[in-house]
Length: 620
Image 1 (cartoon, rainbow, N blue to C red):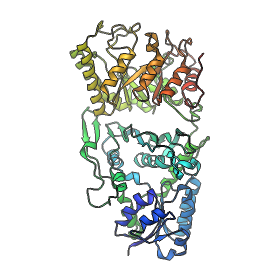
Image 2 (image 1 turned 90 degrees about the vertical axis):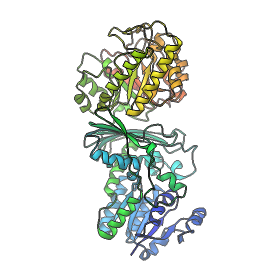
Image 3 (image 1 turned 60 degrees about the vertical axis):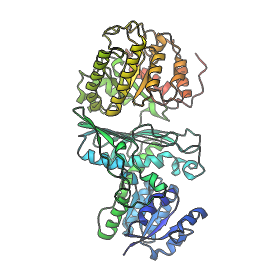
């Protein structure tokens, strides 16, 4: 006999993510839909009996076997407890509750009632995640780093509960998209033992609309999760860095769009990803190929649930997984450590505007390198490396630190054809190192440098043909970056420290990067070099805007010490970046000879939490 089902709620979740799979699976019989909205009632009545309140389900509980709860998150606990109390099996849309305490209550009540309880973490069956699960099991080697991003521009504040409810009662992007991505990270890499992160309300409402989280898994791997309601997908949806390969894929799953167009999930082609959107697997030998992407398959949840309810198979999602996800969500909400968290660095209390890092080569260089790497990591900063070729890569990777940038080439220049070919070839040889370290950004400048600073082969004049060679070479770097899942950043330099480097001024770099116009080629804007070369830093920042730069690098001229003598107005630099809408990486590239902890704290105070909320700086 079919599983008699009450679908409670017929909003976005109930109408587009549950009903299509319940309604097309012969194992289920939707006996009633509950909604109080006249418009939703009219849509549901085309196929089903409609009840006006959940109380009618409880009073008619003998007519149902299963309750599927898709009401607002703040009501999940109340409705799931009532359904269990009425003797029904229960599926709750994600997140299962607003607190881990309530989630555990639901698990305990289900056990006491002898009923089954699961939560609908549908993104486990996204095409990208299904493919990644296969590659984690066999394909990328031991996973070192996982990046997940779920970004969409939903427009101005909406009247519904997602935008109007506080995060503590289930509103905001962290509970909505973040709960999906946190579950996916633990599904792929296992439970997290610690979590830190930040949340922001960019549009000014009570609910957060941007979040970032860092998870350290029991396996030793690290996950970075980014979710947003204020921008379209600009990052890869998923990127796994393993010891044998890197897998990178964009937002490719077609299921949500098809369901919202009204398509029914029939046939083997539903959820199929076109070849043009397949991800790319880059192996340890440097080969990079498109990898077939598994079909998205949200229907698998209800297939597995039917097997469980009728034959005793496993639940599609263990409710204790949902408890662990809520513990992490609570960590992001709270000012204190939760059951799964370790205390976040005091440098990271509050919201984070920029991704912060520092060049490990310039921080107390007399100390052992690994000691410095661990110091930056403990401070919550990414680690920038100059030339990593002679390092013990396994030891660096073993620290678990986030290696944010490294040198991206070793020889050649941009403007002479043979030298440009050599430059690109040397970059290809560096990519396996970037892959081993999980480094997303590889630094370029116009020419190879000597240890003393000048160009190895000085270029004193650049004509139009040489500029065209540079443009074509940078376009090759962009294609190389796309093929291997990295971004190349072209850094500006000054003519006093680095004479003979072609096309090194910030204004020239901006023009070249803008002309190539490719997301895998950006600018690394070095504020020190621009100021030392007599360029107006504020003007360059305005030219950069929100997304032309991959990183902004900081130090004070003329000595390049940090914090320096105060020739550069760093609060004004910060304010200019905020005003321009820049939200990327900000890196400390100044010499710190002693008392690194104090120097790093000053850097984070200026550019860390709440940088976009400080009043504009009026100058020194």
